[in-house]
Image (cartoon, rainbow, N blue to C red; front, side, top):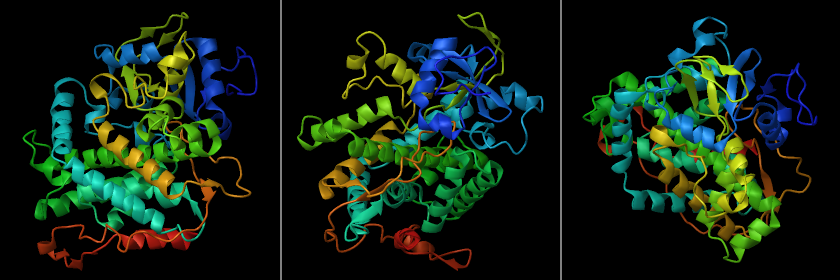
Length: 451
């Protein structure tokens, strides 16, 4: 039985909060508060029917546990219910929780080896050039719908911009990028996870095979060439992780930020009148509506006694509840100041050795997306007749399914889309006898046809 967000009490017979239900997505903050009141820093949760875990809802506890690498491991092979056959092979959460040979699931020396490869690959990216490409692409995406006077900001903008940037950085072609994003969304939503996970790995395998034949000036090739000596399987799994982390949470951050602008006149006014710059405004969103709310996952290597007398068994999945933890900090004495607009002490990019290595890239993409959108469509408003926000039913993410808006139609500002560039080196000509597509513009055509 779930912890009912409409009920002000937790009965003895309701030990688990159900993190996968529409009821939870409608008002997670109330549920976080009640979990904390009933259980303290860590509360039992049901991730999907029959899949048990814990959600950490306290800021200081997440910080301490993420730094305690002797007590907590990231290696999902320690997951006791999975090892004991208590989790079905077709469980939706497996795509996000089962072990992969990448940096997210590694500890100790192995984690340091893999993280060095990832950070070095990101370090070779030309940040100024990538920022310029992101800005040009944001303008061009808005050009694609600005004459219509209406758009779905999530589907036509927030999800497309990070995809195009990551496509370019990692040498994906249009078709691969589109397939990857669709499969990734299903994995995060824990929907048909087995099929979606297989598709993710199939796409990444195709990219790795192509780059073995035709290495280029891209992050995939840099991972493959790194002195850490990543195997093809490790490169594949890092593409799943790093491209996925670059696209999905960044898209959700953009969507959540635009929604906050639309529903909070004071927040919007602060940005419009220059009292708060866009980057600081995004820090406010990361405090109050972060994209990842129950991920990643840790596993205790031995039983962990809790302050309320309960025991967290070894091998239990422990979800890092960043949204709940940020809220606990905001609710502490002087917490509103601690969680202020420009304060960057939120946990939304993680903490400790596994802190997100792509934080600067994600922040740049989201900041650019919001800045360009507000400049181009300053009168943007919720579409007439728009229903209440539809949140995707994920135990891991706070993610809008749609965000329809309307605005005064305007003329495009660019003559040519910036993605009219080859997705692979021009001297490669073909891939295994199949001509390479030259542009990514078909992606936008597809999105417009959906409307």
